[in-house]
Image (cartoon, rainbow, N blue to C red; front, side, top):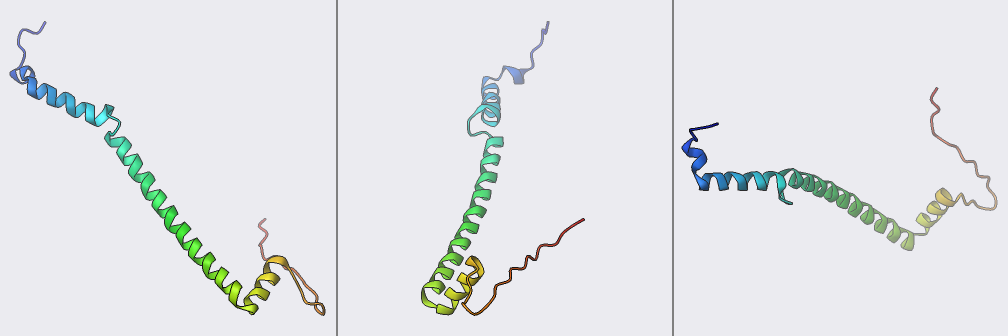
Length: 100
C-alpha cells in the first residue's frame, strides 16, 4: 500500500475545509445549482408579475372609460357582443388568413 502519505493530506484543517466546501457545493439544500434554478424562477416570476400589472392597469383604464363615456360603451357592445341598431344590418368578417 501507500507507505508515504503527503503532509497536505495529514492536515486535518485542510481536509475538514475541503469536506465542508464539497458539502456546501453539492449536498446542502442551498447548493449552487439549486440557487441558480431558484434565481431563474424568480426572474421568470418577476416578468410575469410585471406583465400582469400592465394588464391590470390597462383593464382599469378600460373600465373607467366604460363607466364614464357613452360612446365607449356603444363601441364595446358592438365589438364584443355584436349588438346593432334597429335600422342597420350587421356583417361579421373574419380576418384570419388561410394557409395551404
